[in-house]
Image (cartoon, rainbow, N blue to C red; front, side, top):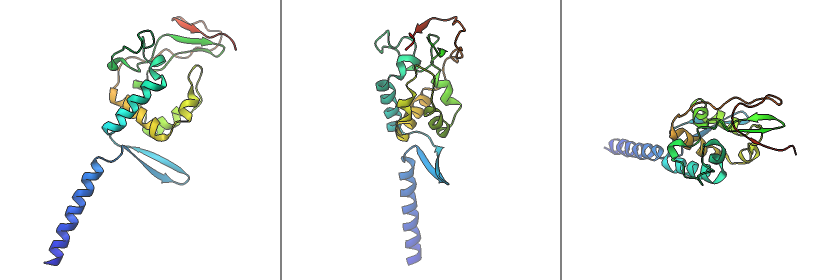
Amino acid sequence: MMSHLRNRALCAAGAIALTALSSAPIVFAVRIGERALVTDIAADDSTVEHGRYLVKITGCNDCHTPGYTASAGRVAESQWLVGDRIGWHGPWGTTYPPNLRLLVRDITAQQWLEVARRPMRPPMPWFALRDMSDEDLLAIYHFVRSLGPEGVPAPAHLPPGEPPQTPVVRVPRG
């Protein structure tokens, strides 16, 4: 009789633990050697909302969402982060803001952390991403993924001396 009660208690404890895990954070880190590897799990609502907030306040939409700055942020969320055909032209050539929705569709959370912290061409303030916590970067990743793929890839970077065929913002030499 005692073992039957103990088994029922263990089953109940297991059910409670599984219920708790279902609302656990979206990402688990697994330590392998010196590095923690991130494994993807579906994002919870609070993580996606945190990512939405970060995208709004850090200026991601300013370049990666057409018309966002000109309309003082009055662009439907369904059109956010699709990249832009307006380039940034300077001594480095011409850089186009990529379609982040297509980018995150094709990479894992771990790959996003690596990409986000890698130096990028101007005018991208990559150092701001480099200095963000994993939690913040992963929230952005999951928010962008929650939007779903949309749009087309942005034009490729043009090297110095190659004239752009699209509108550009010209950045004077420093």
